[in-house]
Length: 232
Image 1 (cartoon, rainbow, N blue to C red):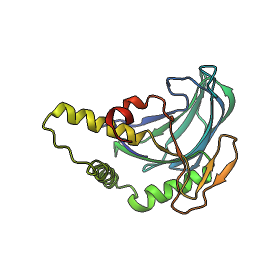
Image 2: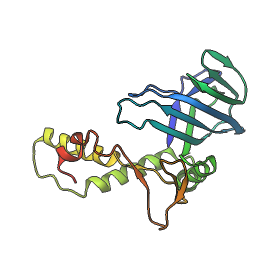
Image 3: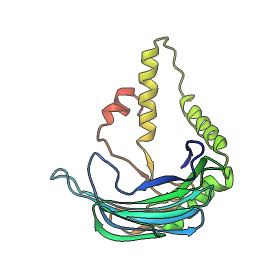
Image 4: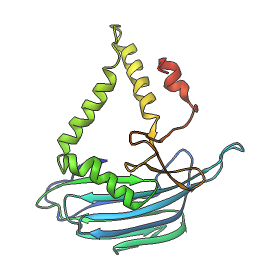
């Protein structure tokens, strides 16, 4: 992921908050979190998230999201919050907590724009680092417009696989909305090196170089995308 934040002019410092417990349809708890600053513009860590069963048939969810986040400006000051406690320090290491997050302060007086690039992995921080390096750093460096144009080209290539002949604008909106959702409902579960974590918690590796492990919500709510659009 690549983001760009423009802060108001003439501010001596500005903050970016990284919330490790965001609002969700089905709430979860933080079993353990660990984040530390590994360079003057980089933080790395993981968040182990547990969500309870919603219905008797649910299996619950158990994820460890490993991540690496880099900035195009040096971090002036780093802090963290655990529940209601806030401290300025370069790491966070906690277990069985309700809320936690990182606050990062930047000197934006000379340059009000801060760019962010990140990589994630469900397997390891090392894999998150490799994913970021391969998918973002090498092809795009800090060129935000290049990333945006690449995303536009990828989506246009997908949308151009079909030809819409109707002149009804509302029908076009409905179709492309459903097509977009049908593609987005498939998540890449494996890393670039082929490793992925199964429901048993064991790390597995794909045999083929071009294989990809996908995750999704199975057929839950597919009437919003696949069924209604007729794309199967």
